Amino acid sequence: MKLFLLLSLLSPASSHDGDVKTNALHVLEEKCNVCHVRQNPFKVFNERNMEKHASGIYKQVFLKNRMPKGNEIKLTAEERETLYNWLTAQLKM
Image 1 (tube, helix red, strand yellow):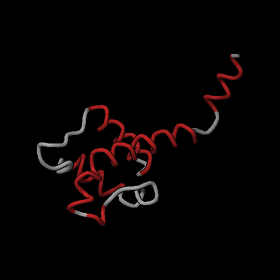
Image 2 (cartoon, helix red, strand yellow):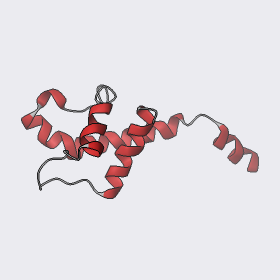
Image 3 (tube, one colour):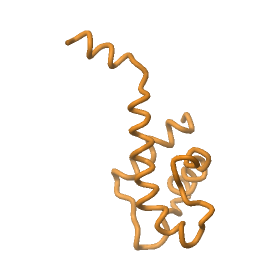
Image 4 (tube, rainbow, N blue to C red):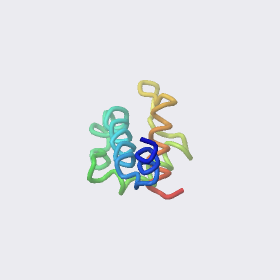
């Protein structure tokens, strides 16, 4: 049992990385795409393009605090952490 735990800690984190991406995509779909689909359809996030937009998402959400806009949609602390974890892994920060 101890060997299994040790090996699981040493193995590549690909499934963990997948979970991080999946969780981040869920936040993007639930909190970002709601407005983007109406106001900026070229920036609707999906599994195929989210990496391409990673640096822009980081800039708008964490550096400029511009997204999400308005008072209707807010990111919870957990959602911000989810995005931050994915972005720092994606952008190798």
